[in-house]
Length: 225
Image (cartoon, rainbow, N blue to C red; front, top):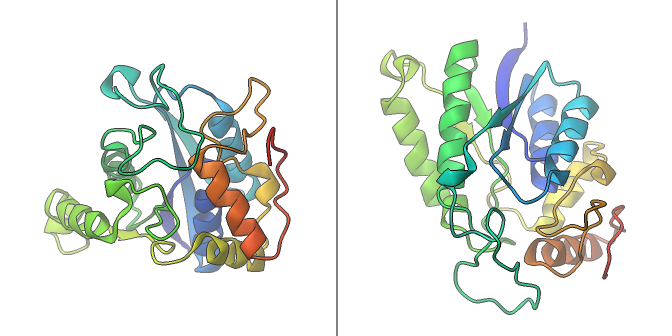
């Protein structure tokens, strides 16, 4: 019987890649997606597509009260920066989002008997979010060990961040080698009502540059690219 792994699945390029890595490592995947009041539902549609593509044993979409997340361009009426020149932590940062997501994931893992959780954080080509750094993953891993029954009994849940030290182009090359279909993913912070990527936000810029560096064509369509 295959071991179970929880995949934090946003529908983005990174979460599709970690799903492929988990499957390649022999895991039976359980996808977990969050509806946290983000301004668009495009990423949830992509998360469903990713879960279907990889034949996830189960895909759960969990709703979190959007009032928890204030002061972010992704949840409030705050403009998404599109000039590529923002310094510091950008307004697209969602307060402690990954801390909450991992907590939910660890709870589900312990509930279904999984001892592995995969998250697609990256600390090379990223927007500078503090909850994507290796130090954060190390700290939350220790908290998960100390705060769970299975951890107390010596069988802790391992939190895997296999993309943490890779450039975005390296992530894409890894995914392509594992036959990931990136046309079903979504990365844009500010898509059109039809779900078309803007091509100008930080996430679009990083993605487009990475595909170019990898010598590949991004299968998504953009308003500006």
